[in-house]
Amino acid sequence: MSKKKFFIASGIIVAVLSFASIAIVQSQSQNVSGSIVDVVNPVIEPLKTEVMLPGTVKSEHRQSISFSPDLGETYQLLVEEGDDINEGADLIQYDGTQSKSEQEKVALQIEAGYLHINYLEKQEEEVKKREKDLKKEVGEKEAKETVQAEKDQLEFERKNANLDLRQLLLQKEELEEQKQKLTIKSELAGTVLSAEENPIEQKPIIEIIAADQLIVEGTLSEYDSLVVEEDQTVAITSDAQPGEEWTGTVSSIGFMPIENELTGGDGERTEYPVTIKLDDGDITKLKPGYNLILRIATEEKQALTVPNSAVLSEEGTSYVLIIEEGKAIKREVTVGIQSGSNSEIVNGLSEEVDVVVNPSGVNEGNEVSIND
Image (tube, rainbow, N blue to C red):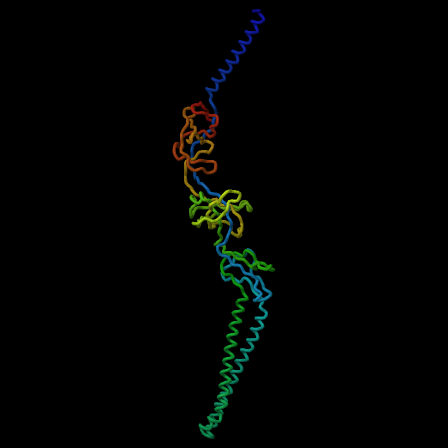
């Protein structure tokens, strides 16, 4: 072998040995320092699971008042949209010009009736006085016969006048009742949803809802109906009103499902009606028909939790990696409910252990260092 080839071969061998030495040193260095990981201690905190579904605002009780031409062609609205009113409050006053005219006419006839009756009673008194004077002159029998026909006539006229007056008084009562009908009153305490000055045909002049009886209705899937119960708390929001929030409770869940064909599917989806009672929040910002987002808290409790990212699964078993004496140790755990970014740990951990937050790339038995 020539010297030149010898030197080339020697150089290649030296280079290979150098690279191998460097790799061994680096490997040993990594085994000494290990991976740097972030850890947390499990903490006990409030945890809840929710069922989210859309809902629609409705009112259990409402009053709709339409224009009534029988009461008159003109009217005055006595309330405005958004007004809070009591039961029995005046809402609409119809003009009732014809009714006023009839009332005045009847009032005059009643006054004339009283005057006529008073006149007849005075006439009867005069006849009695004349009969008394005649007794002294011609005797009682002849005096009575002389004035009897006149007395009978006056009595007949007085009775007829009383009957006419009674009829007029009844007519007056009827007109007063009609007058009361000209003032439309609220049948419930609540909020005025609308008050139209110029209502179009078939549209109510005024709509009122009972403010304390505003509800939200939605539908539950078959699965959700198994976990949602009455009196559970409901958080309510609206995409149309960002920042506004309301709270309520589940007041009822329908026993029978509603019919709802699943569009685009191959069957029907079973859904159950659910009613939410509003408990808190600015109800004046809600109207029947508004669409809301409902979050029903189906379970709330204090639980031991870790971040979701700390929980791994393998062959149907859940586990986390904890740090003991500088090494990663696999610890099997029982996972409960999940809420947001945290998971409940039912069994397998205590608050004192260090749990690796993001164990990706870390295996059991690896030496690790905790990131300060």
